[in-house]
Length: 580
Image 1 (tube, one colour):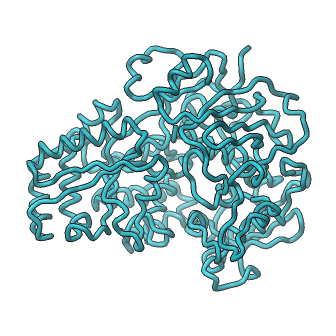
Image 2: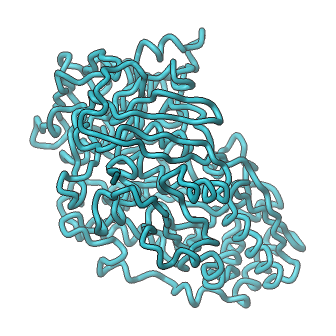
Image 3: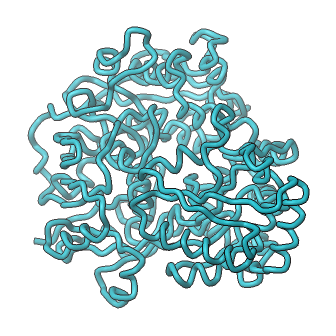
């Protein structure tokens, strides 16, 4: 469910919810969508993390100042003011001073007014030095970050020196660290972490030392301000969200709400779908062939490019995972073509995923831009046992080892992850003849993302795993943020001054106004990541969803960069309607 759910998050673009609201949810809507989650949400506090099932409900029940919404004619998407009343207004010639006007009629789902006070309070809580929310790094590492965000989180300055100040209840003044443009400012305030939290509940749930809060842990400690409002949350049972009549674009939502069951097993989900009790089911890869010609199936690419993550800071086995020759051995020792055939995917050699837009003016994908054809290896020529064994021999010699083991982790509920890792285990056994042994490790679903992060306080948290990264598809720049030395907390131990310099220039106003320059810098950064084997591209898998005949999708054509029918999950099922 991951690609589907994350896309829902971006469409709705923020967070909060409650059951108290005026009762006119049927005014322009009818019918309930029946859906499912693979696990129950654990928290709807956007500062506590972004596990997939949390993000699904947060994305539906939260309203940011701006959000990427479908155009009313279904032709594509557009950055849309949500809590804000209009797009950011530039106040200077340099592009650092901005004004954001807030709607004077925006309300939380219980009818309370939501204004600039809520925005300021929420940003202060995001960056609070005592809470030290790790998710704040998404904001503090952004190019369009306001002045002082990082320093405030470190406790070095007070709020009066931060570049977000309230002029009055409906006006916010923003000073950014770098010259930027209107879209970048809007995108910053469209991020999940910059969305508002409901102060009365946030404060009521605060611990005595103000380091944690129980906000967002149940239906009575959460308040909505997004397209939907949370009305029911039974742990390990079900979650229900109803259309929020206070949301300014509620007339675009043609359903009364969404009822989620908790169904951990994909086979069980399929059985329940066939009984008619849920309206959508993500097809397990083993079922693709069976439903190949079914008109109810649609396919899209989203966060689907999978990489081998190797913890190059792990000190075990004399630090062999940080050895470049070891990473070369993995690179050349993986038969991606055979792997992709078995799991119904496409072998890849690139870093940038399929859905990333290269030219926003034409909608052309990044991978279709003329300069993106340099990829250093064809995936069909990347499996080379001779090079793999030579590289491994060098790595073992340099680390004073006779052989080594490499532990691959995967979510315990992932049937594809198990099949994939077992196949890699066999491939390496055949290729390396006992010099490199793969061990498999299962972890609870939702924990792999947290574990596969470079953590100097826990450097042995993982050895290797296969997973994806989740940057915005709207601009290739976002795909490179994770690898900069300023990204905090770091995702990788690897850092490079040259890469940082390329990234800084790609984020500059010069590159913003010169698409060719920006893309040229992106090509260089991508080549550096591939050459250094920072992460190793493996394969790209489309998501295939089977939907009930009673469901009408919002559009019928592929929206480049956002997927088929609903924009890679954007608006699914938020913008569907129901045929009775």
